[in-house]
Length: 239
Length: 211
Image 1 (tube, one colour):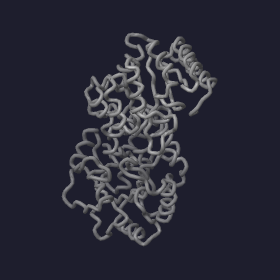
Image 2 (cartoon, one colour):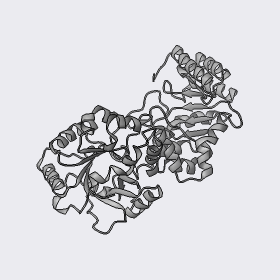
Image 3 (cartoon, rainbow over the protein chains, first blue to last red):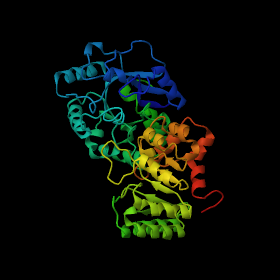
Image 4 (cartoon, rainbow over the protein chains, first blue to last red):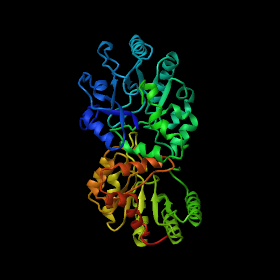
């Protein structure tokens, strides 16, 4: 069983082609990934409506939100995704408070993306350091909400261990690409129970990060939690 | 890493690599020189290749289409060794001495018998690969970027697998993600073998040769 916490479908900013949820799911299956936590990028960036139709099996839907989201139209989802590096989110305003209240009430995860695509597709509008600072305040103030941080680099985790090590925070490995042996280094900083497998597909090859987890020189007990055992708890599912 | 090293710094760096090659039979060195040093650079290339190094590395002191590169290129042709040239079309302004793929293409056109490796596929891999496509004496390496979907297939389709080399950019990047990218690519097993080892073995003369 492998659960991928970082997959997108649909057409987003700068996307060359629209990938359907089905195409995305099949690509992940071909890479040996069983369950995908996925969202439609276009609902966050292009204000597309949420698709209410049936999804392929083994896709766990998250709702990609823009700062203009309408709380009343949120689909039934296990979590929400926000992209504060690329869109101006104000974590201290009434809209954010409403979002957090919804997530608390519906037990939805808040997945915060620090990085998603490179600047050729998606220009950064808020410096990542500033986003981390604001996210830290938000997460501290909402200890009863579960957060996943995606797109962090190893250096950012190292500089913010007090954030990434919190008991209501999980970190996905998709963008932890530097330096050599980055995964063993990461699990020295934060407990492997807080680390989730994320492929970053379809921006990245789904198998590249999987190959890294399988072959890294981490403790023999660490890959299973990262690849699948850690995810059910924040997702609230039975593996 | 120094953008503009002195001759002494280059020599010391090369001495370190030569010492590593003595103890690690799988280490094959490339001689690091700066075109800014002209005569010293050519002499350093001769010293290092005589001592067993397999190629030349140019980083960012001087652009590769600058006339100061030409004596080094001619020495490389004469010795039959490749030159690896850093190229990275970053999103910020590139460094003054950093070579663009089009400038590497100029050098390749001037010396058609010189083998050039354009490092990192120039980061913006479509632009990089397209810029060097018409120059069969330019190879590219896969290092230097996140394992972006389609990057390996694009290089193979546009250049042919024989012109694509595996590169990790270690220790800056995680080697395993970079190997995973080539393993994940939708290419034939023969092409994958070529990228992961056969092309490099051929390039630095390792076919059937321990060193």
